[in-house]
Length: 440
Ligand SMILES: [Zn+2]
Image (tube, rainbow, N blue to C red):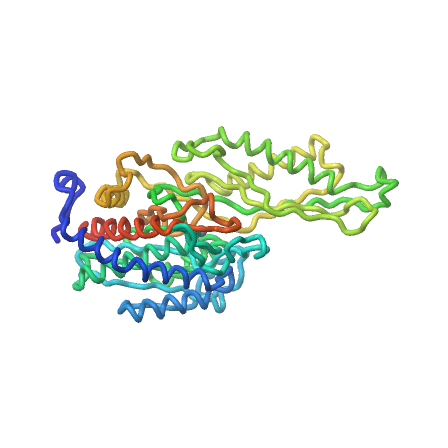
């Protein structure tokens, strides 16, 4: 297939009406197999730290289907030169990374799809109508922890890779790869770093996350915080003699809400204007109290400060800290000592919507008859693996996948099977457009 520039593409949108029909046929014929693959992925409980069985399973799938599969483990020592590896995380031992490759003909740009292998814990399984590790299907939806975040999107990418291999036995002009990395839910970026250090530096990257099937050209940076409040325990009936960390914690939580409102108006980014909160501050954990009948001497909370792509994390950490210190200045800390610790940190990214990768995605959406005409570019409303390679190499990156963040991390997480199949076609078409562009 000849190289197509963006302008040529506009004049002649199809190198490939026949090819597209062929791809659609292949994907349609394989829908049952794709669905079965996704069921199996969902039945493997790959919580953070326990990703091995999942990637070994996918590695076997890849080899059975004739792909090159690089399954490797990285150690902290190998990665020690990089900041991401120094952040708190579950040790990497026993948590392999997998890269599946459909080699190209060395004539065009390479494309990597990135999926994280881990999922968060399902919580109380009794609360799920469809078991968290069941992969049950009902009314066109497939259920399970990770269904949309991100095993559904991963199944789309694997289906796309296989369809491309069948449609192009000689390979596309450039390589197409799928990397499956551990630990995104535990320490964003660390898993992708393992692949980066292994030597994978693709020309373009699609990070698989639930984006309602629409490509997103930006993602959030962010930081995890933990706030500790140290008081003094005394008998509850003489509590004026103690310092109550729970009272101080209440003031902290109120203050965080105010900060969220104030932070929204500082350097806003229009790609995130669609969302009700510009920079969410979400407390996901509180704890406190040692003895009954006493004032609390130790309480705390932890959560995420979600930022915008261009935000300097160090500047925002300082701002966050300074604003909390005001509690002490205003005497709202109840006399408690307040300490703040930051752990996980991740960078965001922002790709121009004019970039050929964004245009390749748009062309794929148009080709497949999806909603490219009505689509507006916006950021992905979370941190994800996009920031790592963007920060290192400015790798052109999109975040893209079936399913919605509204279902992610919740009880009865699901993804629509129709959306999984549609995304497979969009991914395959995007890979054709992008890999056909000549290497720079
Ligand atoms: Zn995710």
